[in-house]
Length: 157
Image (cartoon, rainbow, N blue to C red; front, side, top):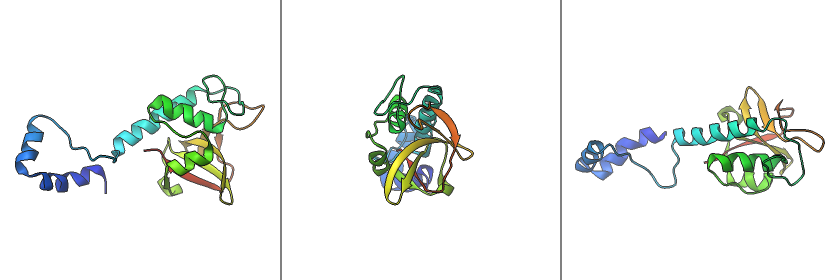
């Protein structure tokens, strides 16, 4: 159910007079703790653009930018610039996201690489089976095709 589908039931609970008052003043209905699809998309789009802007930045273990990054440092930096704080490591970031299926993934979602139940790498989904990420020592931030099926997806809200 999208946020827009919730509006009629929220208005019914608020009462007709409240709904008319709200409409007259040009207000909107917000549900605490619920990000609208549009705001989540804006956050993800901003973070994706930040990550792409770091193309060519060198990998450095433990680095969180703005000139050098490790994998989770790039995602942390990108979402921070977009207005959302994430935890430091890939595993902690996985635990803080809304887990989604591969079919539901969208540009700006996080892609977590795992071995068994252990998350060891993260990147930002760019669409078309590709991610922006900071791969490893000696490499740079770049766009790359997802190379394995051992991935999980998470959406930052």
